Length: 74
Length: 495
Image 1: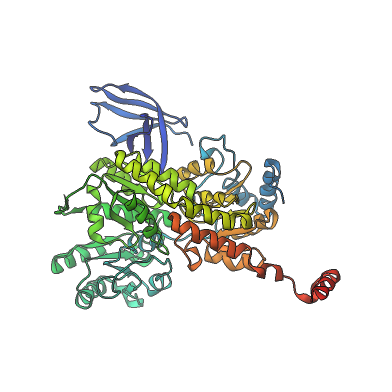
Image 2: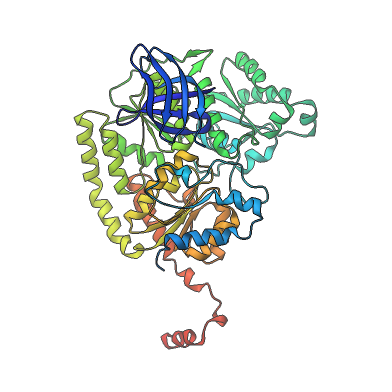
């Protein structure tokens, strides 16, 4: 489990940030992206994948959340 | 000499790596790369932020340097105690030239060194009592200090002193927060972790007090911004600040060059955080974005092209009045920039530069050199991370050298082969390269010159580069009796 921060990039896409490893990357896909259910499996541009417990969408970004690493790119 | 091709650069790296033992070679190979602009992610070509190899000459600092020297040190109305043996504080005292205004020793303490001067008995019996006594003495001698921070040196962590408890007690006694910073030098692989620890300490101890946000009577305005990650080296923050103020913004806080504690407490009220040194202060900007919903923007005030780009990007976050202000500022300084370029470009055109600096300059100053017609052929970070290299790959030309945490040996070999006209690095490299006959600028503290930020700084930058590269001393590298006979004859004729 790792603490991650999700924010909006300049073109409106989700940006993933893992402070511990200074890993910053765009999120290419998020399993659930509706106001009621948000999270699930997220895929990164670098090929990594993380899992966020599905939850109601945060009111505003950036948002810090615990995530489970499914597949790291490195 | 023409630029190296990609194959030649790769061959050069392979040749330099040849001397290492097998295991070291494998490790160092990951840190050296040929730039390829088509790569989106730097980590495909270069590894960074890893422990230095034992036995090589590395140029890195420690976590204490990152916290006390870089982030906390320049906050001028605070007293920063270097808690531990005397050397760490004394040998780094005032070395970074973070300029400030104020009466040193009365209401500002920037260039002073406060230390608990650990002796053997403090290591054996612990230094907590000494620290408590020291804080009491400081309160007696310097009553105008706004706050005290305790910057741990290595032994504090090793012997397990409880500086938090001492700080808490002292804070209650003097009714003034005392900030314990756990920045022992052995933490992390370089000063980079010290920046992070220091940022976290600001978050926990300056923005919040007893778990609550600090409240102030400050009235926020619509054009409030803060300058983050500008340490006012040689006056850099001042030459940046005037540009922002001229375009109509109100600069509320300077982090942390010439900065005060009050300014820093006001930062959560600003509309936009402007980050110059991304590496050392992105952590706090990200925190403010999440907690206080303040957007942040990286900018670059080196060289007129980048300044104009940055001013427009900053203005885009505000209304038309500021946008017009930005254009007015750019137009106002254009004649000055034209004059500087007209004067120096002819003397510097086509010169090639190799850089090896800290956290932002390996990529930020590239624009400055390009504005003068110079080319950066190699760059690298002492303590950069992957995200720094991501940003660098786009700035650098194809087939140029990238080196992370370069060793003394590698750097010398690269210079011997690439033969740059100028090297920009730190004081430890300066005299080696000058003795090799290569012009050198110390790019950490601008070689006792500066400022280099902003339009005013660009003029000084251009003058300094010209002064260094075209200095007549570089033609005198050979002893007269070793000169070839023809050269001596010519000299005789000329006389």
